[in-house]
Amino acid sequence: MSMNYILEVQPKEMEQLRKFYEDRIVNNNNQYVLFHAKDKAISVTAYTSGKVMFQGVTAKSEYEAWLAQFQTKTVIATIGSDEVGTGDFFGPIIVVAAYLPEQHIDAVKKLGVGDSKKISDDTIISIAKELKHFIVHKSVILNNHYYNKMYAQYKNLNKIKAVLHNRALVELTNIRKADQIIVDQFCDPKHYFNYLTDQKDVFEDIHFETKAESKYLAVAAASILARFYFLEEWIKLENQVGELLPKGASSLVDETAARLIQKHGIDYLNQCAKMNFKNLNKAINLIDHTV
Ligand code: MN
Image (cartoon, rainbow, N blue to C red; front, top):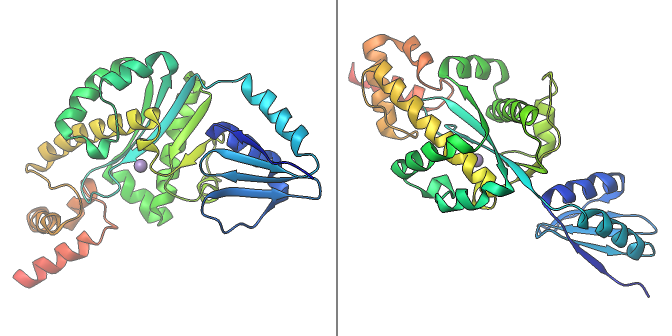
C-alpha cells in the first residue's frame, strides 16, 4: 500500500514543480487543483492552497527530493507588479513593478501598505511619497496617444497590459534579482506569453495570481505606487485639458467627453482618452441629440 506525501510550497516552487511535471499533466476540473500530473509511477496533485500531494510508487522519494531542494531556500526578496487605469476612459495606463527585499517588509507594513483599492487617494499619496524613496521600482506609463496607437494595432487590452508588465519586469530584474516574481493575474498565463512573442526581451519566471495585491506585500506596494503615479498624471492631464476630469467610465464621463468634442473636435480625445471605450460613442450620441 502506498502513502500520501504532502508538501507545502511557495508560488515560485509551485512553478518549478509544474514545469518539472509538465509533460505528465492530465485534465482536471477541480477549481482547487492547479494541476494534476500522473504516470505509472507517480501522481502529483497541486492545490491552489499551496499544498502538493504525491502518491504512487515513487511518491516517497520524489517528495523527499523536492523537500530537500526547497528547504534550503527561503524567500528573501519578492518583486510584485500591478497596473492601473484600465477602467478609466480618460488618462494613461500605468504599470509598476516593485522590489521588496525581506529587510523592508516591516517598514512597508508600518506605512500601511495594503490593497490600493481599499485605500483613499489621500492616504495612497502619503504612503507612496515615503515608499518611492526606499522601494526600488520601475514604472511604465502609457499615455493616451500611444495607448490609442497600440490599441489600433493590437485590438486587445490584455496584450497591451502584457507588454507593459513585461517591460517593467525586464527593467527591474536588470537591476534587482528576486526569489519570486508575482504579477497580479489579468489573463491566462499561456495567453500572457503568447502576447509577448513579438517582444525582444521576455521575462519568463513569473508566478501569476488573481487578487495578488491583497495577498502579496510586494504587489500591494506596486499597486500603491502605480495609483500614485496615475494620480500625478491625472492632475497633469486636467491642467492640459483645462477642466476636472471624472474617473471611471460613468455617464459623467460621457458628458465630459461630449463637451470636449464640441469644444475641440473628436481628435482632441486621442490625447486624453481611450478611444476604444464605449464612452466615445455615448458621447457622440449625446451631441447628436442636443443638436
Ligand atoms: Mn491588478
